Structures are given as C-alpha cells and as structure tokens.
Length: 312
Length: 286
Image 1 (cartoon, rainbow over the protein chains, first blue to last red):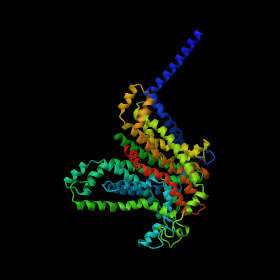
Image 2: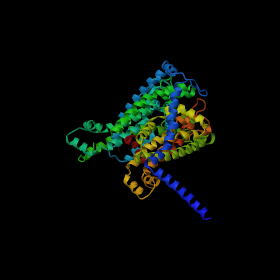
Image 3: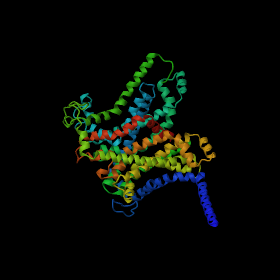
Image 4: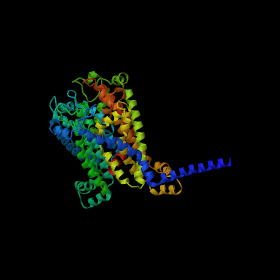
C-alpha cells in the first residue's frame, strides 16, 4: 500500500517535471517565436510558395485542364512570342499602366493638396473621395459598363446635349482606342483615392515651419510646392507609385467586366489573357506562361521597395 | 499655403478656390454611384428609351428590379455565402496574423528578418499570378466548387497584409510593460494575450475591417474556383449570373450591384477613420 502510493507520487512528480520542462522549452524566446510563426509559415508555404512553383512547372509543360501534361521545355514561351495576341497584350499592358499611373499620380497629388486645406466638412469630403476604393470593383465597373453602353450611354448623352460632341458619339466599349480610354478611366477612378489619401498623410506630416520659412523668403505658392512639398513627398510618392504599379499592371477585374479584353484583344492585359487561355481555353501550360510575364515587373518593384525599406 | 497673417478677402478667395476645385473630383467619384442607384429604380420603358433624360428618374421610381432580385434569383443565397466566407476567412487570418505579427515585431530569433521579408513579398504577390495553379490545388483538395475553396484561399492574401499591419501596431507598444510582466512570472502567451493584445486593438479593428472588405470584394478567385450558382459569392453572382445569355438587364443588375455593396458601405460609414489609417499604414509605414 505504502509502496504503491509512493510509486504513484513519483510518477506524478515525473509527469509534473515533464510538463515543467515542456513549459520551460516553450518559454524560450526562439521556440515561442517559431511557434507563433508556424501557422502563417505553413499557410504561405502551401498556398503561395507551392502554387508559385506549380505555375513555373505548368509553364514548362503542356498541361491542359484535366490532363497532366509532359515537360516541354520552353515550347509555351516560344508559342506565346509567336502569337500576335500576346504581343498586343504586352503593348496594352504598358500603355495602360503608363497612362493610368501618370493620371493617378498627377491628379492624386493635386487632390491631396486640395484636401489638406482646412475646409469645412473635411471628413465628409475625404469620405466621399475614398468611396470608389471601398465599393466592390467588379460591381462599380458594371455601373461604368452601363454608363458606356453603346446605345444609352449617359456619357455620350451628356456630351451631345452640352454640344461637346455630335450625335451619335463613340461606341466606347466597341472601338479599340475608346475601349482602352474607358478601361483607363475606370482604373483611374478607382485608384485615385489610394493616391490622394496616402499622399495626404504625407502632406500632413510636413512641418509647418518649412512653409513659413519659404514664405518669409518670398516664395510663391508654386515655388513652395516645387521646392518644399514635392521633395518632402518623394518617399511617400515612391512607395505609392510602386504599390500602384503592381496593382495596375496586374489588373483583372476592370478589364474582365468592362470589355473581356475586347474589342479584338485591344484591352487584354496579362491577367485577362492568362484567364482566357488557361481557364476558358483550358490550356493551363500556356496560361501559366502568360501570367509569369507579370513576374519581372513584380520583381523590379519588390527590389525597389526592399531597398527603400532598408534605407529607412 | 498655410499662413497666419492674410487678409480676410484672401482667405475667402482661397476657400472658394478650394471648394471649386474639389467639386469635379467629388462629382467624378460619386456620379457612378448616383447613376447606378437611379438606374435600379427606373422602369424598363424609361431605361431603354432614347427620348428620356438619363440623368434623373422621370417616370416615377419602381421597386420591380429589387423584387425580381429577391423573388427570382439566388441573390439571398449569394449574400449568405459571401457573409460566411468573409467572416470565416477574416477570423482565421486574424488569428494567424496576430501570432505571426507579434512574433516578428517582438521576439528575437534566427531568421526573423528573412521571414518578415518573405511576408512582405507575398503581400505584394497579386492573386492574378496564382489563380491558375491555385485552381488545381483546390481541385486536388476536393473543395472546388464549394465555398470552402474560397475560405481556404482567401487567407493567402489576407495573412500577409494583416501580419504586416499588425507588426506596425505591435512595434508602437513600449516593450517595457511586457518585460515587467515576464519578470513577474507571466508566461509569454499570457503576456501576448493580456498585455500586447489589448493595446493592439486599433490594429485588430483595422484588420477585421480590411479583411471583411477585401474578401467581400474579391473577384478573380471567386469567379475561378466556384461555378455552381448556389455557391457563388454576391459579387460574382451579380456580375455573372444576372446576365442571361448575352442580354444585360440593367435595372436588376444595378439593383444587385447596389445591394451587394451595402455591407461594405455600412462598415465604411461607421469606421471611416480606420479605413484611412489602414490604407496609409499599409503603404506608408511599409
């Protein structure tokens, strides 16, 4: 009896000891640190890194939906480069990104300068400006599609009735140049708030004294903007531009809803062409190869971002 | 631009100038929403008449399009799907990101820097790069064409974003308080839950709001991974399933677009300041 209870006690003690040791192990800074990261690591490894590797493998194989294909080397890339639609897409992507980014940057800084003034209803104004960024893009683009309708376009109606253009006006989504203009307009509409609000945050952080000093020196308001505001905004502007480059270059929603890449592929971007080839067409290998062309741009942006962060 | 001594006239002129220049921007930002709203209340006869003025409702508002939406389509199912997906994916991501964000911001161990960089890079990887292989992964997992396909894949863009945001918040909390707690015998987990967590609440609110908004608005995964109508999200349901054949029924389409935006707009109206701070934190602190 006595022996039995003693054995029990030591077993208990050993259990407690093991628990204490486990606790001690867990309380170590590095063990705890790795432990907390683990779920995120597993998730990103399985659902970002692994699919990314798959994308590369797909692009080197003739993989079709439903039939795992064989390794074909760079055949997909050769096919793509011989494809007029792809070359058109490359041109579209650069035109689209360059024009949309320029508009967003210029208008965004201008809008931020207007919003930073101490106007009545400041909060309401900012709320209104940010709204296009919050509403689901696919849905608001649907609204734009209706506004650019071939027959009942409110844009054309207004332009005709104010005498800006003569009837019947352009078929926005049915003519290649106009379709690109429409897609860019919607992208600017939706991306402008991000620019304006972020630049605004940068503006607010510029010390007032700089302006006062510049004013004492007799600088005009343009000179103050050029020599004080702009140089101090440069870091913020750089980050916003880099971010926006990625999201503009890889845009899918707006083009898919508004034009599906048409008319005659004149608004296709990498993402929409990859979707059309890889999923609608079922040629996963070639679709993956197309989507990988977004990578160099992404790499470039990541490089600059990281360099910028390190410098901070 | 900002000065103390200026005449009242100059200040008045500057205010007028400010409002006058803001007007086109406000108009540009809001007109599409106004137009979507009035379209959803117009009768078909008015919508498709070349003689009517499109800028306002002439022949009386009707609710026919909304009635159609509730009575004859899967709209309510789509809303329900979207709610389940957004809430679940956001909650999962929040927990994962809280742990990772705390660890990266606070603890010192080998590889912490490179993992932080990795999170940042995945934050920049756009969904459009991964949707093709992910559609196959979802297939293999046997969850394609269910709402689980989206609950599982949405954390891939939410976790990097939320981790990055929360790291910023944890860094602003003074380290000393936590060190005191540790010295007093609290375990690391207790320190995290009882001390760091309550102080990071603004960050958590931000993550919840952005998580909800981003998942609710997500389009390409929802379009790609789910094809059965009853499993679609509100956004994809409205954009894809309200168009029958090649015919666009603009009245009901706009009614769907307006209603499917409501949850996000409600969040937005109540938490505007969080949206602004999250938006600038994501980019500027980055």
